[in-house]
Image (cartoon, rainbow, N blue to C red; front, top):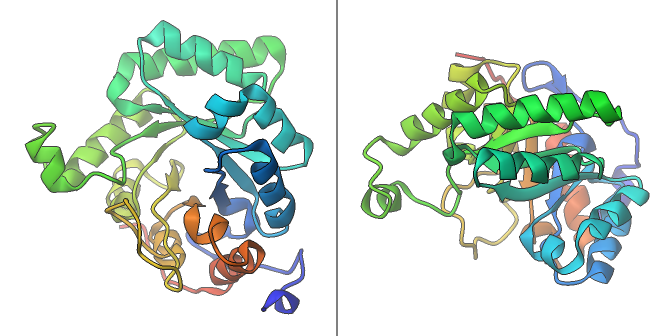
Length: 266
């Protein structure tokens, strides 16, 4: 156990473009099958985790009450439903999420610039009307489970994967989105293309001490992702399926807050 090394509230180092990195940048995916398991993880991991991701499995089985339950325990929520539909449908779904008080939500960039632009405009109006704070609006670029070979052979995308992801990120930025969800491998080219103010949320995070039994193709360690320019890292099974999830979360945060790097925006 390493729990005694790091009390809650310890100081963090300044790095990654001068941004102080700490528990607020760590997001854990609640990919579990019951409200009891989810809330147990929230209670146990909150000292080391700032955001909890609720995806299709948990939201489908538990609905909006799951978001409310996590929020009631003082945690932030990333609503990971990857909306991908006509502009009006996506906008209405996102406006419903606004009332839940989520910190961030996402849509597929492949829905197009018009869909994203409508989302941004409608959410802005609804936020002003209701006085609910705006969540971070994120575009999903290319799923971390897809390889460049699959992108070419199955989806007939002729661009190199990194170039295609940058194209989607620029599309999202031009539509007014706050940032994108991208794999660790595409952080640096997106950061160069979209600048320092564009939020990058990065799944596919695998600590060096975790196993590699996974269905994600494009992964990296927490240190590598943050040094490349990620603003938030998303971790799932290395924490939630660890023998001791609390120790795993603390170990992850220790890596986040004590690693050093010399990142420069090129």
